[in-house]
Amino acid sequence: MPQLTFALNHMTAPSLPLDAFFALAADLGIKAVEIRNDLPGNAILDGTTPADVKAAAQRHGLTIISINALQRFNAWSAEREAKARALIDYAEACAARALVLVPKNDGTGRADGERQTNLMAALTALKPLLDKAGIIGLVEPLGFEICSLRSKREAAEAIRSVGGEGTFRLVHDTFHHHLAGEPELFADLTGLIHISGVEDSGIAIGDLRDSHRVLVGPGDTLGNVEQIKALIAAGYAGPLSFEPFASVVHDLPDPKTAIAGSIAFLRETV
Image 1: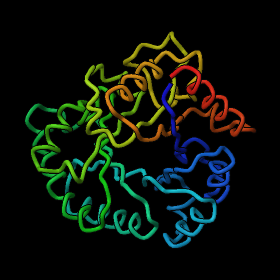
Image 2: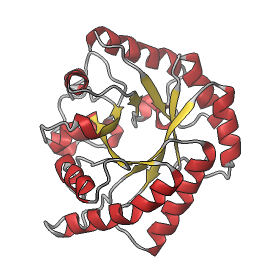
Image 3: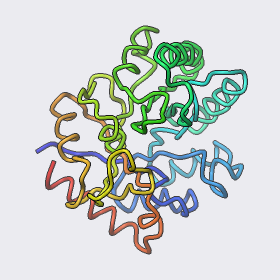
Image 4: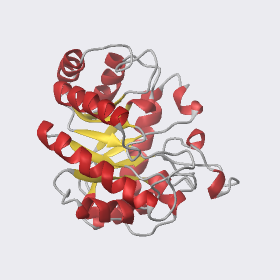
């Protein structure tokens, strides 16, 4: 049985202030966290300095494995570059190890040829910025049909084409992997696994949304256990990071007990 390690994405408990979120992770025995730049009224959007974030993580004995995320990274422009530089600087200053890169997800940029060209341009521009700061770029294909980067194969090919194997890694998101229907895993390029489950079996795959994503348990329909087993068998040795988006999780009065239950389930079944 593999020795699983876990991480906690702030989306698991987005209403918690950063210090309370860090305390939750530490209380669960989790040593790695992902912070976000899309939580209104919370760090990073509330103006919390990277020095304060770094100090809080150190106080709780945590490693910040990523900032999540540079959105629309493959729609490269002067504005996107400025946003990337700001997030990379923040990541470096707070001692985050990586920056998650999320593609545009609005139905545009999906044409064959166009999407590959846009992806290559973004990776080429991001590589020197990330390398200078010593930050990994975590490319996260999304399984939604409207997304401009659904395929991990396309992402992997682009990473290799720009000589970016030392700069970029893939995020294997169990939800998006299920939606994309792409069987290949690319464990050798995987830098992080995001885990969440779906328990409503009556929803068609094409109709699944972030709001359906709960903690992983016995009722999961996404095949989390099978996906994780396969990735570990193929050589993945990093953390499994909880990233549920459903309000039923966000509104839990006792998230610690629920997350601990999911950890126990995965340790028993993977």
